[in-house]
Image (cartoon, rainbow, N blue to C red; front, top):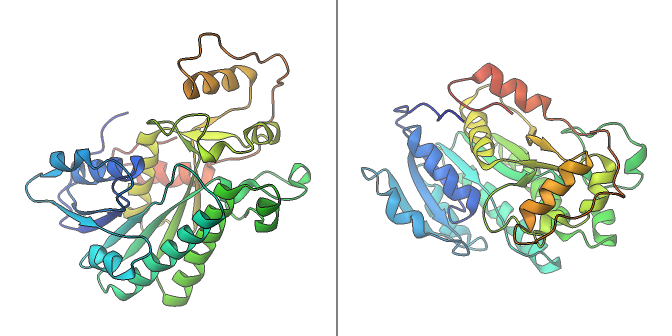
Length: 297
């Protein structure tokens, strides 16, 4: 990937949670673009990179609690943009409630911060694909939503959490007049989180059979967030991925990435080639038109 062009934007933005894999990469990408960054950490990830961010005093570190509105408000104060992402290594009913509350707090804080021009809200493809009779529907698009009752029935807690938190954010953003755009990302192909226990992968065999098992490289995901923030044409939701796992060899390669220490590759005899039923054309079009050194899927 060609690096994004350095720019002197003069703008200050907030990245929350900056201690997550995506959050830390966003801080790096935004610094490269010339932004001043409020790096707000929820304290669950690795902030070892914080010492590397002392780039001409363009990074201010914040400790925020997703359930503490005031700590969130302090981090976004004075920022023209907010990049919000929430990730956890395991999901259950309790974590669903936490993520929904966190999304509400972030959007409420942004609505009260006069300088905020746009919120880029990271959601997931899992908030789009899970529903009854999904095999008989048309291809999956940004307008689709996972059905909460279906997610609860099959204990798809990651999907339920992403669906309800994004719906909460959209409802409050529209009510408060917050300019929000969401990025519905595929499985992120980076870091120790890329393992068979990743909560995104609950129901992976069904995703494969439905033609909706997709993944995204971290570099593209970062570029997509920056493009969506900077482009005046960005709106609504954007599916973000650049790998669709639809062939047996794709599934084997993903399995090897998830478990690189496994001596023998898994068998794919029982798998068949599947028609891809999900597309990222909306994002591809936006990034192609925006250009400016950013990667296109």
